[in-house]
Length: 436
Image (cartoon, rainbow, N blue to C red; front, side, top):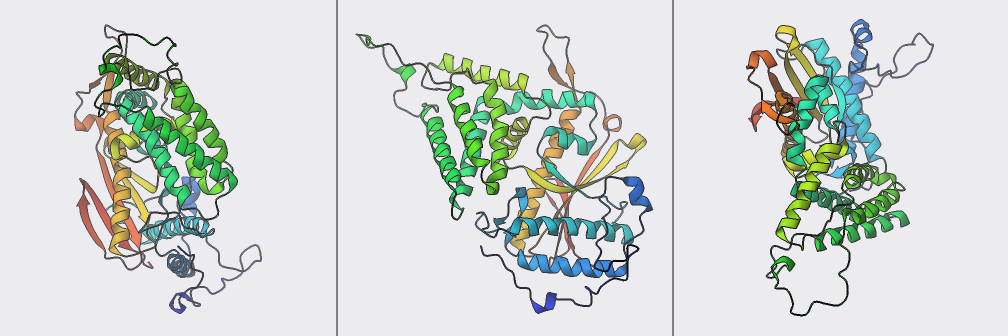
């Protein structure tokens, strides 16, 4: 997709972009005051609301950016063609999309503070990259004691062998698809493509051969055994070596920095199981033993802040490995602030139905992760069992004791139809960018 540098005459709102009066420092210019998403709440409460001209200037700039980013989906840190899903060739698209998101967050937060936000107090939206369980728990305010319950609940489910292998393959497939859409790949990128292809073939060759008519563990033993010694079994160490070389090659291309981080995350798990046999063309009992070893070592070693563990959770829930970037605000209510309302927001550059549906699906995945972690945090563990291991059991506490979590999704855009609806159990609101 080509980068649009032209702007429609309608968007050139000179009146909204008039120069502001002299600032205390003696300088003129359009001043975009720091938005209400600042982490310093005291300064935020003392800060005067932006002047009327700020809203007009910000609105005009948002219009220009939305026009230049039409047809671009900037979810997950990489600008993509909204229809095809391929990477956008424009080198300035990522920076322009980041500027659009930051300005939209400030505009919406300031407008909400000035006009109120429905039946809730004004939200303080903050851009959040959901890349680990720690980030998710920080949003939900999960205590350190309850975070152990989260890990003990998540690990046995997401570290199963088929989830682990599937996540690895999805990381490689996602990387190969983006590398294929790059224009003028560098030598390092070409090397990374070869390594990724070799790793994919390796995983395919060592996959379960249950579909074969005669896997090795079902074949009769030959009358005369071969004289030569059998070749040593392949282990996950070979995959770890390939991922190490792959990470080095990807680090040389800034366009693939997101994939480099994901490969580095998966290396954490590969290192823990490097001595375990990866081959599946063995006896069923032996294969099952190796599967249990993979699950046991990953569950024991992957900590709460592990990006590898979070990637496995994403694949377990949705079959994807891409991290989610959303704007999050929350409101506390109830006795002791136990009840939490989390607002996840996304700002659209397109106002068509395709963009709205795509934004709803992305927000739905983020809200689903919040819901999953919240429920996991409200389980308890029993460390005094016969085997001396932690076992997750459900709490008997009622809703009033553990609090209530309410999740809402919000989409802002130009030219969208304002509405509210439910999707997969959560409430979503579609808003227009409007001047207060």
